[in-house]
Length: 226
Picture 1: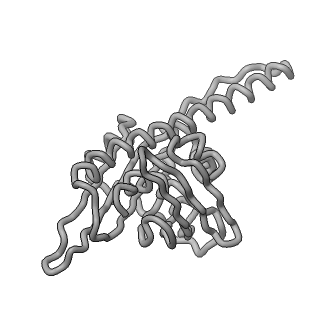
Picture 2: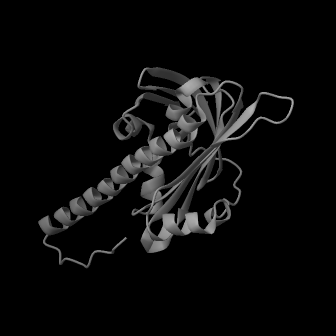
């Protein structure tokens, strides 16, 4: 797995499938993180992230790596979810993703990319537990065995909260400082790029709608603020 984890951690968690499945109730995001983390992500729009490489249990060299990212996007739930599940957009939103090929028949994604001198290629399979709760698992290539989820939560006029998480066990890891602090920097950068892309898309959609309305000579209406 090596230092590829910095590349895969945020990227894979962001992909999702909208294929039909038996629906379950998504966990409330406030139940997944500390109250202060939830408040800062929701009310202050801070990008909150955490990454931890746990110590190996006694008698084994396998260590568990866990991470999460939480942010609020000033855009409706549908636009946020649709954008983050449009795989063709990922090379535009994330510089280190070079190719993303999704098969709806197999519900799997072929993902390729690179960061610094590291290259990676993985196969990711998805399961939709509900429209706002999607789990994933890396089944082949780098990070095989990595599991995680993406959860959306509608917060009315504030927009949409998005939560990414993942974890994987392994015996060979880069330095702990890179996996924890370094990963948090990568998570924050990637989440900020994604959020900006969605919010700019929302503004473009509003402006296009207003332009078409003006061309038809309609009376302007107050813009609903998100």
